[in-house]
Every structure is written in structure tokens, then in C-alpha cells.
Amino acid sequence: AESTLKEILKARDSLRKATEAIFEDGGHVRMDAAIKFALDLKFPHAPELPKARKALEELELEEKRIKELEEAIQVGGYLKEGDDVDLKTIDKIVGEIAQIGGFRTNDGKDCEERAKK
Image 1 (cartoon, helix red, strand yellow):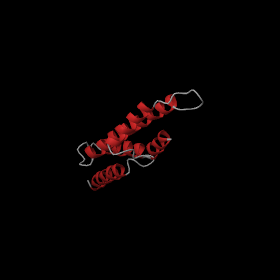
Image 2: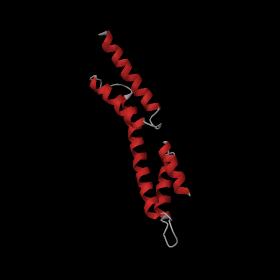
Image 3: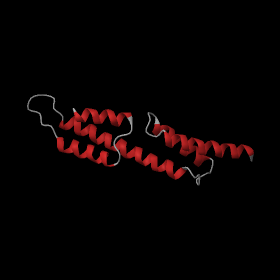
Image 4: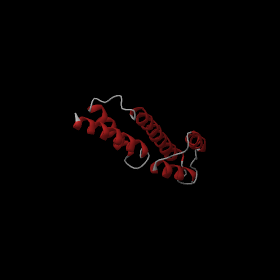
């Protein structure tokens, strides 16, 4: 019973730490591992699990927006004379991200900087 309690405490700590660091490099992998660890312990009611899942959803939304912005930059970017720049799509995505607090990952921040150039 003591080892089970230690494992549960470890799972809760892993979920807390993964949630706090979700937007750092490797956050997705750490969060997936922390959630899996809690569920493998048959601990689906860990108090930290809802917050961890919400943070993971926010990260996945940001990753989706990064991909959309990357595609908009690729398609609508200026490479040579005569190219069209699709600022509407780029501005729309950047605006949507701003409404939810802006990009929080390094990849997102880098992508936003490229979009603004």
C-alpha cells in the first residue's frame, strides 16, 4: 500500500509539473507521459488530471494554429516580384491567437515573428 501511495503522489506531481511546463519545448511529450502514468496506475480521478487535459488541449490548439500560420506564410509569402502576399489569412490567424493570450511556445513565437516580417 505504501508503494502504491508513493506512485500516486508521483503521478500527481508529474501531472502538476507537466501542466506548469506545457508550453516549454517537449511539453507535449511530458504531458502525454504524465497522463499515461496516472491512467496506468488506474488513477483516472487524479485532481490534477482535468487541469492537465485542459493545458494539453490549449497546446494542441496552439500547435494547430502554428501549422495554419506556417501554411499561410508559405502560400501567401513574398518570394519574388509579382508574388501575392495573403495578409488577410495571416492577420486572421495572428488575431485569433492574440484573443487567447498569444503564442506561448517557442515555435509559436518564432512563427509569429516570421509572419510579421
